[in-house]
Structure formats: structure tokens, C-alpha cells
Length: 101
Image 1 (tube, rainbow, N blue to C red):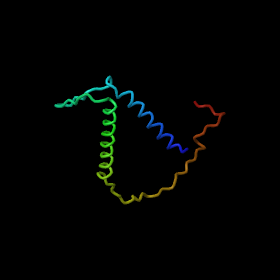
Image 2 (cartoon, helix red, strand yellow):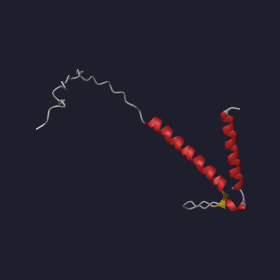
Image 3 (cartoon, rainbow, N blue to C red):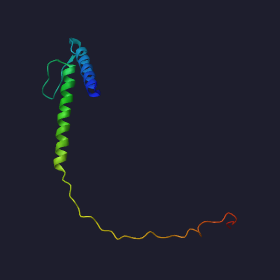
Image 4 (cartoon, rainbow, N blue to C red):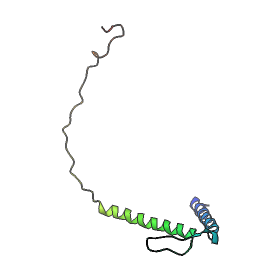
């Protein structure tokens, strides 16, 4: 079986198990907004809705980022080409028999 199919089946199974454990009466809560309070909703629904809202917001931000920034093509800068300098390192290297004073 393809790996994507196995991964999809496992993901759906894990989400289903998670939803089953969090659907009962003991795992309900209400969400407080500034002027509004929702009735008690299962925690699983709150998690799914918040995840989907995050996906929508991040998709909009990424799309606006693509359309908002236009790259300006600057002409290439021609710098003068220079030859590498040849350095004589023989005077820099001391012979092992010489002592510094």
C-alpha cells in the first residue's frame, strides 16, 4: 500500500479516537469573547474550528505577502576587475635556526 494512504488512514483514526474521547458531557467548555459567551461546546469542536481559522488566516497572510511585495530588477553593477596581488611570503617566514632578538 502506498505510504500516503497509510498515513491518511492513521491520521483519520487518531482524529476519530481523539474526537470520541472528547465528545462526552465531561469535556465541554464555553468560550468567552468580549461581549459574547458561547454555550458549552465539545472541546474537539473548539480545537478543529481554531485550527481551521488558523489555516485561513495564514493562507490569507501568505497570499497577501506574495501580491504585496514586488521585486524590482536592478541593472547589474559592473565592478572593475582586478588581478589578485602576488605576495612574496619568503621574507615573512622565519627559518627555524634564526632567533628573534
